[in-house]
Image (cartoon, rainbow, N blue to C red; front, side):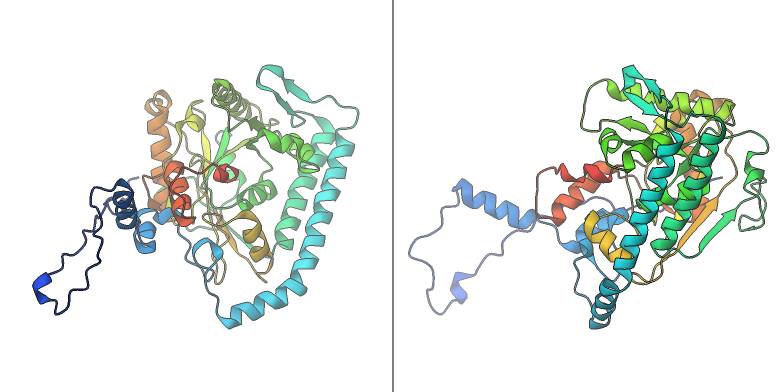
Length: 405
C-alpha cells in the first residue's frame, strides 16, 4: 500500500549581506572617526553569526516534526491568555495535588505487588549483557503481575486525566474498511502471534497506554533499573537495558537480546511481547520519522499500532519541552485524550525477511497511510540541533538523551 509522501521543504541557508550606503545622499558626514577594520576576524565572526541565525519560522519549517502547535507555544514558554492563566491557577491548587497523590499511590501499590510476586524468586539473568528481569516467571506470579499491571496502568492514565480511550481494531483484510471499530484484538493474533508491537512515539504516556493494553517489555536506559520503585517494576516488565551514552560494542549485544526476545515472543505465547519505537525519539504526533531496521532483523511478524493525542490546550506530545514543565502542565489539564489504532499483524514476505530495511520501510509506509501521518526524513540528530537552536546554543547538546526512548 503506497502513500503519497509529503516532503519537507528543502533545507536552505540564506545569507544576508549588509546594504551599502550611498555617501553622496548624506547631507552630513556622520561617519565615525575610527573606521572598522574589515579584516578583523572578531568582527567577521560576529557578522557571520548574526546573518546565519535562523528565525523561529525557518526553524519550524525545517524541523516541523518537533514543533509544538498548542496554546503554550515553543518549549511551553509562550505568552498565555489570561483565561489560560486562570485555569492553570485553579488546577494547581485543586486538581494537581490530588493527581500527584493518586499517581504515587498507584505506583507504590504496584511496587508492593511486584515485591510480593518476586519474593524468594531469582531473576532471569544474562550476565554478558547485564540484563535482569522477572518477566519469565511463570504461574500465578506472572498472572498477578501482568493483570494488576494492566489494570493499574489504566488507573494511572485515569489519574492523568485520560478518562476515555478510543481504540480501533482494523480487520485482517487490508482492503476492508479501516475504520471498523468492531474488530477484535484477538483477531489480529488468530493467524500467527507477532513478536513485537511497533508503535509511533509521541510521549512518555505511550508506555502507560501499552502497559494497560498488552503489558509488553521495552528498551530502557540501564539507569532505570536502579531507580526506586520504578526499577523493580521495569524488571517485572522484562525491560531490555541499554547504556545509551556508551559507544562500545555493547550495542550489538543489546540488539541481539531484543531480537531473541522478539523470536521468543513470536514462538511462545507465554513469553512477554516486545514494544518497540523504531523512530528512536518522540515527535509532535503529525509525522513519522525513518524507522531503525534493528526492530525488524528477526523477520518475525509485528503488530503496528498508531497513537494520537487530540488536544485543545496542551499537546501531550513530548517534543521540544522539558520533562518537569510538561508533566506539571499535563497534570493541570482537566481532561486529556488518546486514540489508538491497532492495524492487522504485518507478516513479512521472504524478500522483507532478507532485507530488514525494506521490511521497516514498508511497515512505516503502511502506518503513515493508515494513520494519515506525514513521512519525514529527519531524525534524532536534527532534533538535537533544533533544541540547541531554541536554547541559543550552537553546540551539539547532550541533555536531550533523556527523551530517546
